[in-house]
Image 1 (cartoon, rainbow, N blue to C red):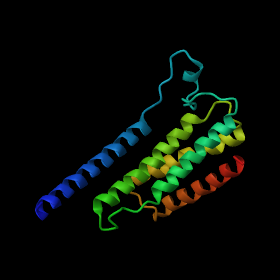
Image 2 (tube, rainbow, N blue to C red):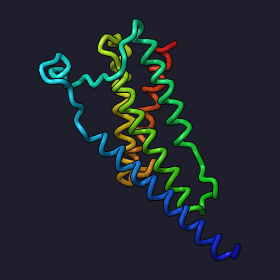
Image 3 (spheres, helix red, strand yellow):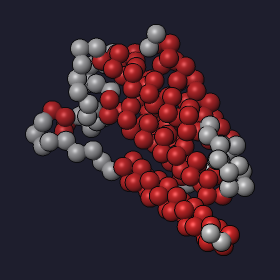
Image 4 (tube, helix red, strand yellow):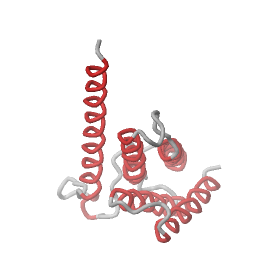
Length: 171
């Protein structure tokens, strides 16, 4: 196969990866701003702060701690990835950044959706706080605000502190 054909095939794959990453970010942002719907007339429709969509368990603390660990690990993994082609791989850099943003925004939404109404307040409050911190960081990242920005750096530091608090509560 000619070098030109391989180069153009690589370009097509890179462009497709970029398009998929951008679509995923768009879907994540849409999901972030979309209001959750609750059945009309239900107790849930009167509780605007409750978006629980999981299955209730006998141990809401263990359930939310499991969800927290899953989200924390996913965020840690996806925000520390390096593009396979190195820093000069523009498409790879964009794809890695998109995955990091998705893990932040979707991680926050997942935590909120798995927070059972009967979770003890001493755990539920920091989990809600952490979920919102993740979504705030992710939304600002989507808007192009870098981690080096002083306000964004402060958000990251606060989220780390909240994460450590939840880790201690989940022991």
